[in-house]
Image (cartoon, rainbow, N blue to C red):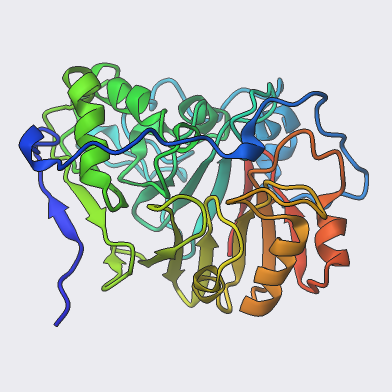
Amino acid sequence: MQAPPAVHAAAGGCRTRPGELGPPQPPLPLPVSERAHGAGRARSGAHRRARRRPDDEAGRGAASGGHGAHPRVSRRTLGNGCRGRAPAGTRRAALGVIRERRQDLEITVVGSGTVLPELERRQSCVVVETASETLVFDLGSGAVRGMLRAGIDPFSVDRIFFTHFHPDHTVDVVPLLFAIKYAAREPRDRKLVISGPEPFHRFWAALTNVWGEWMVGDYPMPTVQLPLACRVPVETPDCQIFWAKTEHRPESIGYRLEAAGKTFVYTGDTAYGESVVALARNADTLLIECGAPAGGEVPGHLTPEGVARIASESGARRVVITHFPAFLQTDLAAEVRAAGYEGEILTAEDGTKFSP
C-alpha cells in the first residue's frame, strides 16, 4: 500500500526545525512572460464572458475588479466565516457562521492576472465553494481584497492549496492569516489546512520564520506536503482532490476536483505536458493559463495553440482562460477556436463565477 501525503501537523503553525530543512535552494526565478509590458489589453466585442449570477450584473465593476457595486459580504458577518448571503431564516449560532448548502461546486476566479500590475486584475487566486467548505487555490497579490470584491468572506476559508511557490501565487497568504489572527470578530477555533507541492515544508518553514509571529494563530493549522505524483486523493466532505505534475517549476502541480458527478481542473502555470492532458481528461471545466502569445514561445507557459491542444486531447467540455498578460491585445477565445478546440471557450475576468 502506498503511503498518503505527509501531514505536518501544527496546532500553532509550522514546527519544522531548521536542521530538518536540508540544503537551501536557489532563488525561484520569475517566468519570462511576466515582465512588465505596456498598454492594457483591448476588450474585444467578440469575447465570450463566463456567466455571472444575477446579483452580480448590477455591479459589473465588482466582478471585473474595477469600480462598481459594493461587496455582498455584510460588515456584520465579515470575520465570522460568512459564505455569502444566508437564505431567509437560516442561521448558525456558533460564531455567527452562515453557510449556504449547495449540491455542486461554485468556482470564482478571484484573480485572473499575472505579475504585471493592473488596476482591473489581481494575481492568481481561485475560490471553490462546496456544500460545506471554502477552498482556495493560490493566493497572489490582491487575492484577499479580491475575495471581498467577489462577495466572498476571506475568513470563511477552510483549505488552501498552492500550485507552486512564485510570489504571484502565494504572497497573500501572509495578509490572510494576519487578518484571521487579529481582525476576526470572534477567535477562530476551526481547522485551516494548508497544502502545497513538495518541498512545501521547506517553503512554509522559511515563510513562518519571517512572518510566523503575526501569521500563526491558536487554532489548528496543519500543513500538508503533497508528493509530485498523486498517490491518494485528498478527501474532503464534499469532493475528492487529485493533482499532477505540470510544466512550469520543478514543484509545480495542477489540481482536479471531482464532486457530484462533475469535474473541475485548475492547471496553475504550465506549458504543454502529457501529465497535464491526463489531469484534464474529460473535465467538465478546465481553468487553464495562457501566458504566451499566439505563435510565440515562452518557457513554462501556454500559447492559445497550447491551450487548444491540451483541451482537445483531454476531451475537456469547456475551457476558461485565465492568467494571461495584459499586453496580449487579442481575442484569446477566437485564437483557441482557430487552433482547433471545438468546445465552449470563456475568458475569465476577476470575479467571474461558474459551476462545472
